[in-house]
Image 1 (cartoon, rainbow, N blue to C red):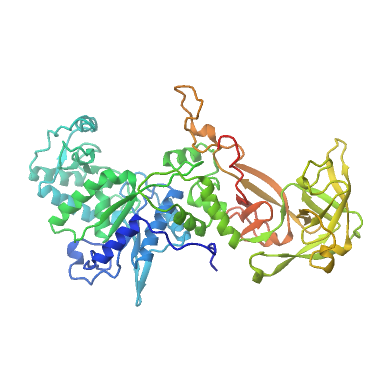
Image 2: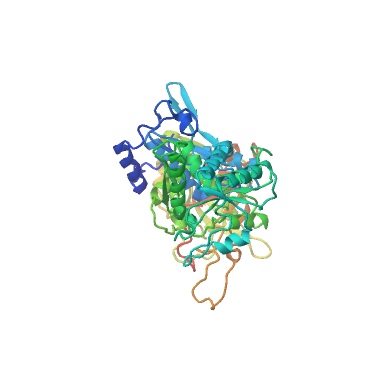
Length: 605
C-alpha cells in the first residue's frame, strides 16, 4: 500500500533533468559499450551496447554514517536512473585505508535499501548487481598513473608537505615549480615503482599531475594523485602501500563504471577542471572509452536547527551529548529510522525542496511537514494518555465494562474499527481538568459536561485531592443514553472532547518525547545583540528538552505493536515502536513529530 500523500505531485523538473533529457535527445551516450562490469576501454571494446540509457552513482566513503543530506543525493541519483531507464550504482569510495571500516559499509547498504533504492536491475533474466568498491580498481589506477608518468603528465615530487604548501601559491599569486618537476619519465617511473614496493616511509615522495603551477585555479597546480601509506585496508589488506588521492580516483571510478552523469555537491565545482583534464588525458591514451562522464554540481542540503558537519556529529557522539549514531535526535539515517521518519517522507521532502545550483537554507518545519503528510495518510490511530489523571464515573456500576469502538483510520474506513474497553475508572490527560477554568476552557470542570471520545458524555461533579492539595481524581457522572454510535449520541451538545484509557484494561509503557536537538535555527552562529568578538559554541545551543522520557497509559491494543510500527496517538502526534528497545508485548514508543508545528511562535525563531 502506498503511503505517499494522495495529492503527491509528479517529479518536479529541474536543471539536472534538463541536462539528462537533452543528452538523451541528442543520443550522446547511445553508442557506449558495456561489458557487464566496470572496465577500461579495452574491456568494453566489442561488448554489446550499454542497456542503460544513463548511469548515475551514489559514491559514499565508508568512514561514517549517512545523514539527511546523503538522503537527498541518494534519492536524486537513484530517481534519475529510474525515471530515464538507467542504472544507479552504489560505489564505496574506499581509497583511504586509515578511516574506513566494515561497520560503515554495512550501515550504508542498510540505509540505501531502507530508502527503497536498489542497485540490482535488469531484464530478460539478466540482472546487474551494481554494487562496487573503488579499492577493486586499484590495479587500473596504478596502470593509469604509470601512463601519465610515461606521457609526461605526472612526476614524483620529493618535497616535504610544508615545502609543497609554501610553493603552491595563493589565490592572488601563482605557485612555484617543484625542483623535482623536471625529472625524466624514466626517473619518475623508477621512483613510483619503488614507492609501490614499499621502499620509502610515508610522506617521503608523492606522485603529482604535471599541469600548470600558475593556473588561477589552485586545484590545477600540479595536484597530488598518489601518496605512500603503510596501512591495512579493509578490503585489500596489505596488498598496497600507495593509495590514490580522492580527486584522482573519483573520475577514474566514474569512467570505469560507464557513468554518464556524475552528480555531486557544489563544493566540488572547483575540482571539475581537474576531473575533465584527467579523463581527457586517459582517453587520449586509449585507456577510457568516450563519451566521458560529465560532472554536474548541485547545492547541498542546509536545514535550520540541524548540523550536518561530520566533525560536529562525531563530537556529539564521542562526548555523549547523544546516545550514539542512531539516537533519534541525530540527523543520521539510522537515527531518522529509529525516530520513525519514513522513506516516503524523505522522498516527498526531496521533491518538495527540489534541486538547484544556489545554496539555500530550508526551514526545518518544511522537513517535518513532509512526514506529517505521509504519516497522516499511513499511520493508524491509537489512544495514549501521556500525563494521566484518574477519572471516576461515580454512577457507572463497579466491576462492569463494555466495548467502545474507534476507527483505525478516519480517512480509510476500509481499515475498520477496533474495540476499546470502557469501565468505571479511566485515565484522562491532566490538562483536561481545571478546578477553576480559564476563559475558553471547554473540557472538564465542576458542573461542565464533555464527551469521552467514542464513549459517553459525562458531567463533572467535583474532584479528590491529596494532603498537599493536588488533584488525584476527577469525579463525574455519565449520561447512559449518549454513547457514541447510538441514536442518543447527539441528544446533548457539548464542546469538549476527551480521549481516555480504561484503568483496568490499559497498560503503562515508556514513551520518549523527542524534539529538535538544537534550540536555535543556526546552532553556534552569532545572534543579534552579541558583543563584538563573541564566538559561540554550537554545543551551547543544544535543546535541554530534546528528549523527555515519561510513563504513559496506553490502550491495550498497543501492546501488540511490533518494532517500527507507526501510529498517530490522538491529539499528541506520530509515534513509532522503537526498533532497538521494543520487546514482544512491551513496545517502547518514540515520538516522531507532533501533529502541528509548535516552534513557529517561540522566541528566537
